[in-house]
Length: 161
Image (cartoon, rainbow, N blue to C red; front, side, top):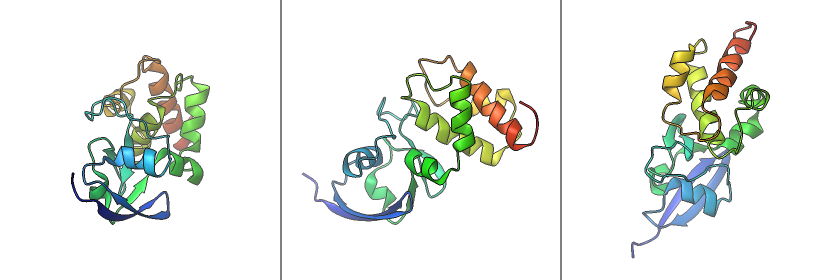
């Protein structure tokens, strides 16, 4: 058994200090140690996007990132982005456009969409599809997700959606 390691990080603007096993994923740490269950674990191979979180401002796959790699970093989860209100308009669009059906992929999809809209507020439907292509959704068929992201982008730019 590996020797436990002390980690310190900011999670959703809260200082966190814990002892973790060196092989514990960031997603498992967030869910099991911090009880923030909005970060989901799907494939555990980094391909489904359900475990997406922000690490120092960049989205990462929480199942492929070790908790020890986040030592000294800033981590933001869906709970933090929701509480701050940063993605309230995007969340409302997901509800309005029926893009959040079972909800399993939704947190990762929202974080991915937020990243895109921050980098390219005028993203085209094709660019939206490409950017979310690493997030699997078995319920919506993606049309509603693309519609929600596009309508949020247009509203943020002051255009009619």
